[in-house]
Amino acid sequence: MAIRYRCSACGNRTRFDVLETRRTRSFFHFDLGGDCRVEEEEVLDSLVESVTCRWCGRATGIEALDDGGDGVDAPERPLATGARAPR
Ligand SMILES: [Zn+2]
Image (cartoon, rainbow, N blue to C red; front, top):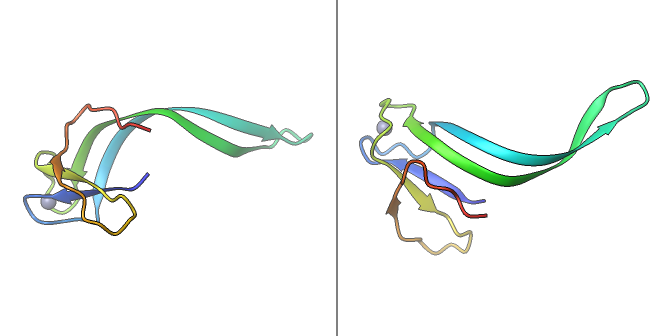
């Protein structure tokens, strides 16, 4: 996943509070003493409920930028709060 956010109000691109609901499948590996390690976690579904700028505190006007990882600027699109991120 390569997503970036940008606050259109203050230009912040680095610090956000992200409220996200995730549905995951995890591999819990217990040792005989009962300690557990999560060795794999697969995100089956995720729902970003809100993104809040840590600089100016706004939760509106946050843009989600797809960073495709190929170095090409992706078109900006407004963050649709409640939209499901495709995986
Ligand atoms: Zn901001």
